[in-house]
Amino acid sequence: MSHHASLKALMLSALLAFSFLAAACGETASDAGAGKPADTAAAQPGGDAAEAAETEPEKAVDGLPDTDLKGWEMRVIAHHDGLSDERTIYAAEMNGEIINDIIYERNHSLEDRFNFKYTVYPADGWNDCYVKLKNSVMAGSRDYDMIFILPFSTSGACVKDQVLYNMNSVPHLNFDQPWWHTNINDLYTYHGYLPFVSSDYLLSSYQYSNILIFNKVMAANYQLEDIYSLIRGGTWTIDKFSGMTETVTEDINGDGKFDVNDQYGIATNYGYHAITWGYAIGDMSVRLKDDGTVELGYNNEKFINLCEWLYNLLYVSNQAFQIGWDLESEIKWDENRLLFEAMWLADLEKFRELTIDYGVIPYPKYDEAQDMYHTYTDARSGAVAIPMDAPADVISNVGLVVEAMSCASYNDLIPAYITSVTETKYSRDEESVEMMDYIAKGRVWDIGYTMTGTDSYTWAIYNWLKKSDGSIASSLEKNAPKMIKSFDKVIAAYQELADMEWPSK
Image (cartoon, rainbow, N blue to C red; front, side):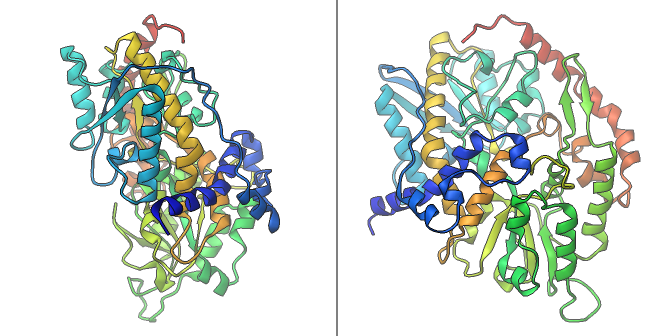
């Protein structure tokens, strides 16, 4: 099959994923929490799904004006590290890799449409792109028009330095459109000022969502409840998860100890995947309040109960197998000795050659009363910002391009990516595509995670869970004042930025 034929084939198969994403945009949070499937033909069993896949749904339209940018060059400085870099927004050439080629075609199609040149400069490391942009603004050298930034890497400097333009004042950005991640953008808006934004333009916003996968062979062998049905019904909870991990955990060789030779309920790292459980129950470490203060989360009955449960899971029960940060599990998936594994969605790209069936699912709820499934989107997902010293015409041009890129990604790139990571060399799992609807809708960020380091209150589960034997309340109380104080300068800078005179769109 030719490359263009294979690209077309994947795009057709991605239509099912698109139908779920499109349905998600019109669904309320309460609908999602109830676990209702999207009300589309693709969500129905049997022939209806096949008919939906054969008929291409009408694509979303960005509604942007016909504009000739007259050869303008849009200069983007992008973060670059070993796991996440400029390749999520830029492709230098067609290379036969499906996602790369969709990005390439998206960019060049829009370059032709608006008559501009899209130039992306890779930085060197997590924070180098921000340092370069800041230096440019401070020097007045106008080296860049946009930045693909990792806000977490700046530890709050992206607000305190006051070098980023207000994204709420950028022409052409329509946050009512489904390709914008409004729950994230709203979280970082303070009195009208928004330093950066997230949208479907950023493939990384999906790649670095925390997910679980489950082993279908083990689930069948142990006659476990159908997890997909539990999720749809809104009854996929920590209690259900715990019962399953306990059922499958075994000291296989009977030597009285649990090590790499045994069988476990879950494999996970004890860092960012562990703190994801706090977000999964609907909590977050910090919220900005309109009165210029912050409200801390975590120190409540639900979070305390979660920590007691999680301590038992990770350190007492033998049900969890620890894997290193950014490493693969020493127990391989096709050995059928792990029921669940925690990972980023991007990690599924390594699973395409497997012959063992797995399912992609969200983290469970705290209980059935929780309104929806939540998952944390890791710092590597990145964001888009514009330098403070950009002139009005550049700001408008960047807004035009980012809106168009976001819509094009919503239509083509994101559905194709979801299809590609839920498809192995040997099988397709339409139900995992469906589960991506729940995962995508439930993605959250945390301003505490973004504006502070890994030694902060935000990382309570990682820093203090083991030390406290699961009784984490006193550690939270002890460290709360320091966390609140760390936001004094952030909020002061936010307020100064909000008080500036910003043009309306």
